[in-house]
Structure formats: structure tokens, C-alpha cells
Image (cartoon, rainbow, N blue to C red; front, side, top):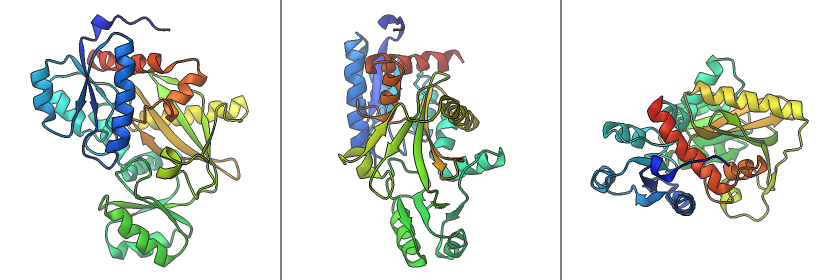
Length: 310
């Protein structure tokens, strides 16, 4: 257990809610973090960022912010930039890492440029882009380029399904990504203050690990230990850490990846403010590493000091 003095953090605003499609998940995560901070005698206050956020923070006399906002407006550099404009330290990644990590298209372009393995993809912004996407070959994964929690995602197996999925995804974001489908096992790698936590292998009878599989289905299975040989797990952890650092992310977060049927890894995406309920993946990985939920929350809060010092 790390030793933190509550006084060194001062008055903490726990930012939650917001206006993104992930508002409800953020409220649940935020409340779990808020309660954990109170248990650690932190002077924490729940702040819904949906309305007049800077006004609330300025009037509240806060010393730092614990960001538990998922999706656009909270995870994409917007709130990070706003907090920097008023000089308020905050948890997790800075403006650049947040903005890049939220943008799946640019994240993948960066990884590809660095020679890191990620499935081939095409950007769909208009109907004329559908043919180039179809040329990748079916099946494809269609996803909004700047959303989280698998919102707006679909697996498609034909040109007609591609068009329908594009139109659905475009309701969330005009930038839509068509990505070559990877058959294999799905893993997630959590990172905490420069350390890699144990990998989790995700198993669902659904087509993929979608919103329902994440938040409501009883059929989802989480394997931690993940079942890989130690050397293989370490290889994937190192790849995930490299991918995380490449986008400029810092402090804490998660990298999702696949291991195809030939045993080759494929990077899928970065999450710079992952879920933080007691059933979420980062707390699960932390628990496997001997880090309880309250301690995890304190470790993340500590990143607000490190960002300010850095």
C-alpha cells in the first residue's frame, strides 16, 4: 500500500457525467471513484461536467481534478485543455495523448508509421469511400472513429451491410473507420504509472465485445491470469506499453489488442480514461496485481501531481 497524505491533494473535483454517449457509464465510474476517495479521507466533490464546468471549478476553489469522463468532451483533450487554461492539475493523459488516443483513425496511422501491428483500415467520410473499404475484404469491423464503449460498432459481411453500418456509425461521428476483421482472442492491457498490469483475456458468445457484452450481459467471461505463457504475456505487455507511449498517453489507461489464430498480435485502440466501476477491466487487472480498488484510485490521483511536476 502506498502512503499518501490526503492534505497533499487538497480539494479534489471528481469530473463525471458530461454530455457524451457514454454519460451513464461515466456517472457509474465517477461515483465509484468518488466513494473511494472519501474512504481515503480525500476532500473530494462530485462534479457533473455537463453544465458550466469551468464556472463550477472556479467557484469551488479546487486544487485538482480527477477525470472520470468517458468519450468525447472528456477523453479527447477538450476538458484537459480547459483545465490547463485555468491552471488546474488533473489525472491521466495530457491534451495531446488524450486527443490522439480518442481518434482511432489517427492512432492507427501513427502506429502503422512506427511499424506497430494494427489491422488495415480505411476512413469512410462519404458514400464514395465505401468501395475502398469493401476492397479490404469481408468481414469488416465498422466503428465511429471518435467514440468509446463500442458504441456504434458493427461487424459486416457484405457491401449492403457495410453501407447500413456506415450510416449507423455516422450518427455518432462523421468520421467512420472500416477495419479488417481479426479472428482470434481479445486481450486488454492496463497501464498504471509506467507499470504494466496483468493481461485480461475477454470471452463473449456475442459477435464481439460490444456495449452489451461490456455492461449488461451475464455471459461475458474475464480471464485473469489470461492463460498465456509468461514470456508471451510479457511480449504483449511491452507492445501495449509501446503503443500507449506512442500516442503520448501517460499516467494510466488501457490498450486493447487481438491475438490472431497464427499467434500474431494486432493493436486495436487506446483508452485514456477507462471504466472505473468495481467491475471494470483496469480495477480487475489491478486486483490481480494485488492492488485494491481504493489503492488504484489513489495511484491514479497521484498522476495529477506527476503531471504538474512534469
